[in-house]
Amino acid sequence: MEKNDRSISVVIPVHNSEKTLEAVLMPLLDELRIGDELIVVDDRSEDRSSEIALRLGAVVISSSGSPGAAGARNTGAQAAAGEWVLFVDSDSVAPSGWRSKLQQRIGQDPGAVQATYSPVAAGSKAATFYKNFYYYYTFTRRISSDHITGCGTFFFAVRRAVFLELEGFDDRIPGATVEDADFAARLVGAGDSILMATEIEVYHLREYTFTELMRYEWRMMKSKVLYLLRRGSGHAVPSVSMATPLEMLSVISGAVSIWLIPAGLVAYATGCLWGIWLSIAGFSILTAGHTGFWFASVREAGMRGFLASFMTFPDLILIIPAVLSGVIMHITGRKY
Image (cartoon, one colour):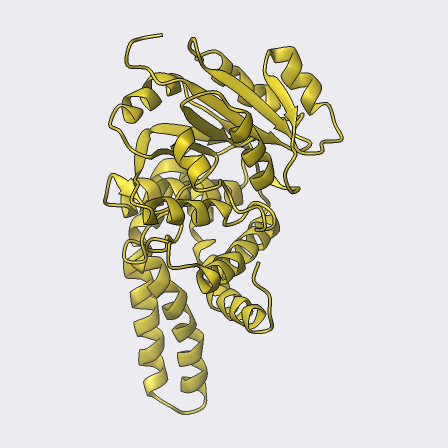
């Protein structure tokens, strides 16, 4: 181990991940250095996940926390011996050279380091490409600072001492939704920083149909609303897809302007001539905010990117109903 290296414990929460686990573990194991370790936390799997991880040389422990990724990650961090904990999802493939690139970022003395999505998406479905490229575009184009206010646990490294001091992820948050945003806000709110490492592009193995993607987006949006309504004073500026609200202005304005289009058309159909101008205004705002993303999608993936561009519309349409649904849930007593 080189003099300035920091030991890293890679923690992977696993639940029935036998189909992707070997592809995820191999590039991680190949680049571990002396003093590093790879811990697979089995979160009540019913398949061969543990057997595969043991065969490949990972340390396997059972999750002792609440069911779900947050509890499993907390279990892994508690068992870790490294100065840094690197959380990797069980469907996320690290790129070649990840260890040296991460070490370079750690050398800049942040509290945490965040990788980005690869623009290359698995399979052939447009929905999968849209999901991946949306995050890649956000991380590399919309975020203007080297430091961010959110995080994504698909490849997220944090000082173990900082993680333990903040008491880890909030395992009361159900599923894999906003537990990472909550942790990032507490970390930044405590005066630490999250450094963006756009040179570490992580390839995701999960594929989505259009229906699966929209269900995922609906669940995530509601979870973000519930989180924003319950967040405490110790949290930093809230993140939206790991960017600040200002950096995501095109998305926020698009969520409003897309509803102006049908509203204007209905008004025009009932005899209000100004309705057509309302529709034009809505379309203009939407187009101004998303033309860059649409062109980038087509340049990256051709026809697949072109088809993926159309998913912007249903994705934006969901935002306001999901926000209202989350507000209603909060008013009626739902906190998580």
